[in-house]
Image (cartoon, rainbow, N blue to C red; front, side, top):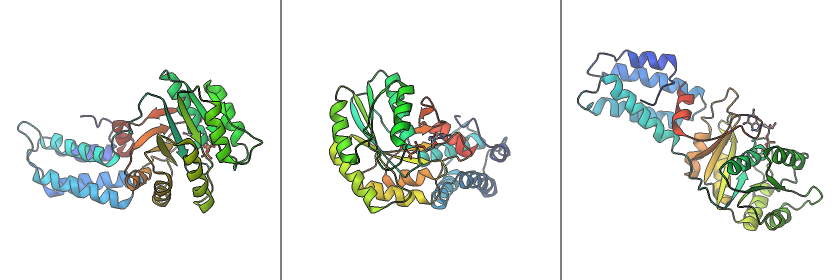
Length: 290
Ligand code: GDP
């Protein structure tokens, strides 16, 4: 079974099933309670936790374990399948020429993620370029430029230009030799109307194949409104969770995944350009339940 990194109390509850051939309601309740505790402390939204709990309870009590399967393994399999259903599969990122636009609030980690993704594509043998259209945050240009230098990837920005749409358009032209264009956009502190107008205009200028919503792992309830707003304006095809090297486990981002009908694409695990991983369900599930 792939759930190799369970928290000790959940493991303990599951281990109580050892040697049992039948599972009773009390056993399942205890296991579900442990899972709920882990997921809620990982910031997974209550509604999602309740839905998952009901599914696990119903299936564990109703489904007959296949012959030869112990009660413990049967429940473990159900927990695993329901967790995979909760976190989803990884966003499909084809290794081919494309334009990817990053959206999110200020400080979520967009600029860092843009450089990291460019580094990731370059390691996959594609030629990337980062286009920095954030004219709002002082320092965004220098930060992006420096990170792209470290990643040894092409960078386009214009510190003297205040119109992000113009930068986007000119950036696409100036980097036309690149195979993968990663377009960083400005965030704000909150979802302001001008942020949404601006990102819609940039989207029109660069016509991305994919727009990713970048969220800090510590995001809680705010995920829903942000996801809805960006989904309605530019359409979100995937979510990036940053700062997973901290204490937050990123469960709040699952709300954004559900809200946009998308999936998780990349995880940010540090401040340097190499600190990026493709999302894969098993590791993330272990993190949530660990
Ligand atoms: P933006 O405003 O959305 O462009 O956010 P930035 O890319 O500037 O990131 C905001 C801060 O978070 C910076 O100090 C980054 O170094 C930091 N940061 C971004 N991603 C990560 C990550 O995965 N781990 C850690 N520890 N810090 C990160």
